[in-house]
Every structure is written in structure tokens, then in C-alpha cells.
Image (cartoon, rainbow, N blue to C red; front, side):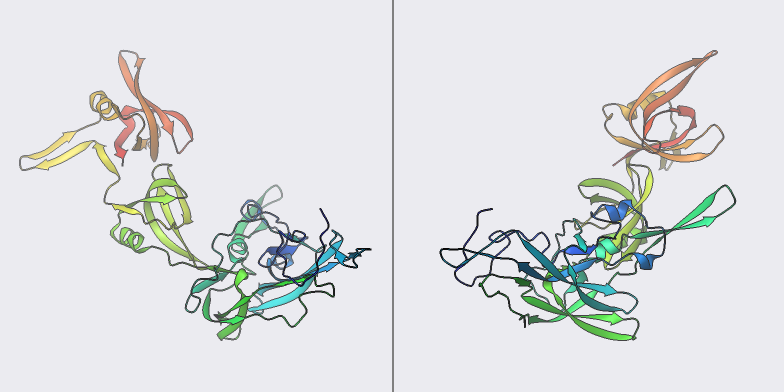
Length: 390
């Protein structure tokens, strides 16, 4: 890197100065923590005392200690890559139910790699706004596995959330400009201290003290919590309807069961008809569409008229008609196994074929089964009903 001469006091950004890998607002933890990347919190469980796992912390101040070389001709300092950093960090202690602060050297900590898109912007309104501490999404994902010995040859396991350092939801009640009491520049007029410019005064319920507490938190350490659009979901659950809902670009047809609140975020538990499974996901910002049925066509078809019931069962003719020109659609079937057990399957790419057996022909449907995640064969006379999913 080309050396630069600093003649006047100025506030250098990381792009102008030597790069700050860890900045104000970065999430860091001790190097002893078992996670490094955002994905690690979903893929890895901790087996042991949860108190042994260090908290995730937010950097609120950076102190750079540089060793300068002096230009022999001008006497000005030259920037070099020979420097060390210290970080002032904040985290939430669930045992004390308060925010704690301390300093670390750069050889003691590591940065958690993630992409946080909901950080509070300095142009928005803060009073009355709901916030979360930016470590919450990751701290909420931590899981603890406990081992219980069943007998000499086998063990049983239970998995529970490790919420030791999850912070309660915060409400903004005011702001305060941050002014450092310590020097920002060194004697060579080079910036050595990086801090926040704005503090948000937040209120939260303190469980230990059984009262409400207040704390000033740097804006870089907060995420906005937007109100989720859950009214249609409540209606669908209450009226036992169905939803078409878009999760991260994947549109699903679901039967909603429950709304679940987790640290200020709402999740939906549901049955996914397209993939034949129960699941639970965070509610997206896009509102779902409500349906009172899951199918556009159904076999057997029953229609009530004044003259009585008209019944059309499942046979080769009407099943072939149902599948005609619709090979890319998905179908929901109620199927009886050879033992008489009833299962519910979602299938796609169906084909009708026959297998001769003695003097008769057995009609089968060959299709991809989403429950088994592979191609399967279904005897037509064991299919109780079939519906073309909307």
C-alpha cells in the first residue's frame, strides 16, 4: 500500500485509511466460540453447559494503535500497516438482565460473518419504534443438545434453545448525540478512534428487577423491527382456510396451524401441500392469498342435485382426463398402503400404465412423490381421492 502523508486533522474512512476489518457495528465474539459464520448457528449444536459459550457482542468503539514512521524530509508521519486494534464491545447478559461493556484486543476476538439488512437508518423515526439488538437473530438460533443414557448400548438426546444472551425487544424513547471524551486523533493528527455518532435511548422490561429499564445503545447495534402482516393469516387459521404464501421466492400452498412469536419475529407453522411435509418459517413481508379449498378439480367427484347425488369414481378414463395436458401440475392424493394405512402424498409428472396380472390388468400411476423424494408407483384402486392443487 502506498504511504500517505497526513498534514491536516481529518476523519478517515476505512477506504481512505488502512482497512478496518472490524468496525463499529460489527458482531464479534471470543475466538473460543464454536461459530464463525451465520450458517454455523443453524448447522451446529452445543453439547455442554450453555454458560460456557461466550456471548455475541457488538463493537461500539474502535481504538487503533499505529506505529508511525517519520518522513525524513518533511517530518510528517507516514501510515504503515504496523498497527493494533482494541474494541469496546456491548452484549446483553440474561443473568443480570442488563447490557455489559468491556474492551478486547484484536488477537482475542473474531468477527461473525453475516449480512444484516435491517440495521436502523439515521433518517428514520426512533421514538416509539421497536428495535432488536443485532445479535438476537443469531443468539436465537443457538441450540443445546443434552445426552441421556437409555441403556448400556444407546443414548437419547433432547434439543433445546440456548437463549442465554437473547435481549428483550426494545422501544425507542429518545436519542442522544455521542461525543467522545477521549481524543479522536493522535499527536500526528491521524484518526485513531472510531465511534458512533448517535445513541438511541431504549426502554425494555427488566425481569430481574421487575420494572422497566433504560439504556443508551449505538444506532449501529440495532435492527428495526417492522410490524408483520399477519391479519390474513389470523383469518385463515380461524376459518380453517388455506394460504398461498411466498417464502423467499418459493410460493407454497399451505394449511396454517399456529402463529409463533420468537423474540419479536413471527413464524408460521403449517402443512406444505406442495412438498408433503409440516414446516415452520418466518412470515414474509408479502401478504398471502386466502383460499377456501386446495384444488381446482377433484376425484371422486360428487355433486348434489335435486334428483340426488351424482358420483364419479376414480377409473382409467377420468384419471387420464384429469392428467391430460397437466403433466406439470401437482396433485394431492389420499392413499391406502397394502396394509391399509392411510397416507397423504403430493405427486407430480404422473403417468398412467397397466400391469397384466393373471386375467386382469392392474392400473398404476407412476409419479414423483414429494414425501419420499423419489419416483413411486401407486395402484389406482388404492387411491381414495386425488386433487389437482391450485
